[in-house]
Image (cartoon, rainbow over all chains, first blue to last red; front, side):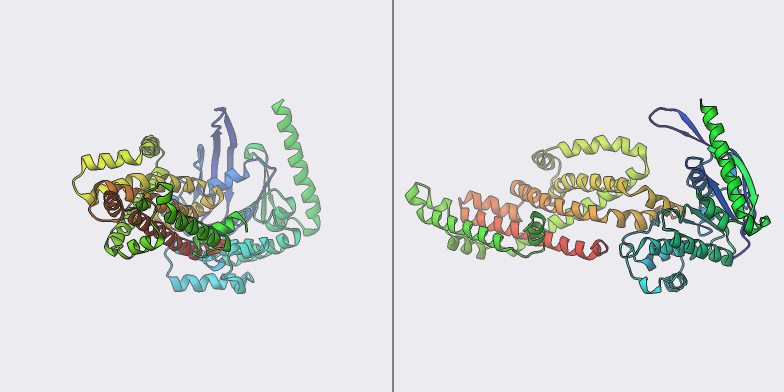
Length: 260
Length: 257
């Protein structure tokens, strides 16, 4: 894989118009960010702060109202097809196709980019093996546990060896032990593949444990803090956690006061 | 036995004890009535004995059965392809849907008899008339069912698929078709029984071959035995075709088991 391109978010704004009331809701208000190649970034914020909208904009499913996301000189929405095979996602729910076996689910992204059947089968099997699911290759999703299904979803994302990996609350619904284990696996694989990884989460522990950098977002995706975790000693992570929590709480109070 | 189990047993081609008993009761009552019909003031030909019906069954012409089956299957395949293609186009284009939807509703409200009359008035060829009627009746069912099913595919799966940036063809073949397959199979089951009934009426009115035509001949000859025999063939055909669809369903939807 070539070096992944840098990601630049410039004055990004996203406004939704509610179909029933006709009112406009600002999901993201003038967000500026720069993510370096191979960086592992955790984006943390409270529910409803615009994280998932940012995720949809990043993968090009939504069009920015104003501003842009530029990845290597191209925009994920405008140059949608250009990013085929270069971006992969892991969602909160596994989102596996129930009519496909684990192996066929992992093969899906390779099928879409036209990889030959034998090659994609071999690659998919090797990824399932790496995630400890070789013996479940022919199992249907309904035959797998939640953790196993999420592993298949991770294999489906990594099989592309994408330049950019996005995870939206990917481990949030799993029990703590499974989530920690999968986070570790995800992080190790992302570093090994040399992908730029963006993890969206509302859990501070997860953000601190995974990210090289933590971006803290307030309401309407207002940038509250941009923290280089590597600059912090592991022993001081508790202090970091408290500082982020305080920032989020203070932003929540400000928002409430502004809304009065 | 639960209601669904009865249905499943029937569709799978196996008969429960209760089914056999109820069929036997019907046969016995019919046979008794056929013997006492004249004494009850009913003409003997009105309720023929099963021996007479059996004789009529021996005269069933395979060609007419084949022609009817071919008409049903051919028209259903055409209706399916047309319905599905239109559903895909309507799913992709909201404006196309807004124009076509009222027309489809109108089509679905037209009685079968009216379609047959239109076909007789508009077209010359018998096969064309029958195909037209069957497509006009069955096509909208495939279309509406497919479109509803496409809209019912979960937002999560659609988002996941789009995130991998498929082509339009890939989007439909890898996600939409497999996702709506259970609904498509249900549509086939509904349309099979509908098509068998419609084709019979269409053949009754304007064909010179097929089961419907043979029913018309039997009616002209006042032969209830022949009508009964051809009706039995029709019912058997429907069960057989449904059993084929159920087999296909069990095979392609085994991931749901």
